[in-house]
Image 1 (cartoon, helix red, strand yellow):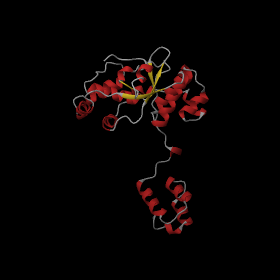
Image 2 (cartoon, helix red, strand yellow):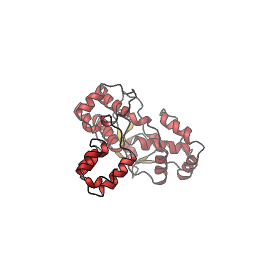
Image 3 (spheres, helix red, strand yellow):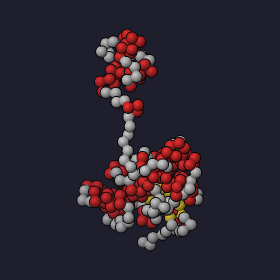
Image 4 (tube, helix red, strand yellow):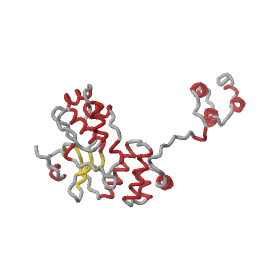
Length: 255
């Protein structure tokens, strides 16, 4: 079958759908169509979901001025479909996305490969809608969709913000809206090294409440203890003596 690379031609097929390999994947970070999530690992449960349940949401594709059909929203589904078609022996993947090559090596010769061959023996196509906005709107739509759907690692978010502001010249306020954070957070992310490993700090340097204290707190709830008092004790802001003095009935529960 001859591949069609024109979005308008693709849409004339009735229910718009295409083969994953008909889509141009942008792997150059300086290109506005690039997405940092491109190299996110492929999860086995998502592969099984697409195989067994089907595509729940269409991709958003855009025809650029350079004639390339690119993804605005749906790169993870594209990666999974590309992997499935490779494992099923329908279309071998020879592209540059390392996450797909790693998944191929991981699932080659496994039960999942057999499932792909069984469920997608004729290949897996992807449905899509056409995105009508310009390059700026497409970049912002990608960022917003990612934040609404997945909790990406912090370094991925920082790299996305730095590219949008420093390379693509997006307004800091607009990027903050797209990312769902404050402008102060965006300005802080612009100053840090995205590749530096970070450790999640515990709030106020306090340890998380232990299982025993949480169990006692559940028992205390049955006595209708004021929530603010009980929460203060669980977090360590209120001492046990202070708690019992304010609510004597708790003496036996927290002893």
